[in-house]
Amino acid sequence: MDLDLTMDNDVRKRCIESKKAAVLSETKAPFNIVATNSQWSSMCGYFPEEALGCSPKDLLQGELTDSNKAKRFAEQLTADGHARTTLVNYSKFGRAFVHTISSELVMDTKNGASYFLTESEEAKDSALVEAMYKRQSERAAAWRRLQLECDEFLRPFHLMLYAALLFFCFVLYLPSQHGGTPTETHEVFTSMDSVGEYIGFHLNPGMGGFYP
Image (cartoon, rainbow, N blue to C red; front, side):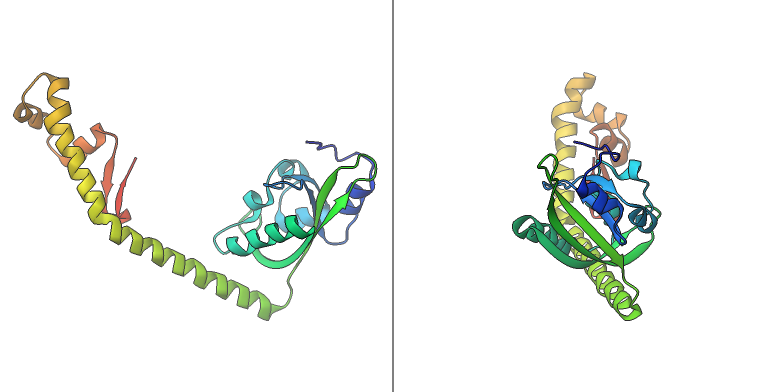
């Protein structure tokens, strides 16, 4: 990947001199950044050396970002060579902002390489910003509810698996390891938590399951 910002060519010059927040990125996923301008750094909080080689998705997406909408934007850009959308993204310091993004395929006339040039403007329309935040907050809340419902549904299966692991631990594995009978082995582990720790898992009812 060429990260030389001093390279003199029309594509980088267009990115750096844009009046809008602009980034130049590779044309293949994850669309790593190869150049930025000062307006983009001001809006997103990243210095060029922090952003180079990173994916815009990794740097900017957060809880209120519509990931499906961002994915459709990337798919349209890859297929058509241009795309436009409005998203909620996040700065380096966690500030959420709404911006309109416009991207197009551009060609470096000196070396024949292709890039995506993406320019964006932060939304100033308070009604638009409020509507985007509200919609994305509702989406995030719905997703959290779905996760809780899934946890509740799967909890009995987690308990069944945990019981099976306990059976294996007491009846099959631990006696051979400690050279004793199942009864003697039971005295070594006085609680379910200690057994869970021994086999590498713990039960967390608050999260609806056990985790490694």
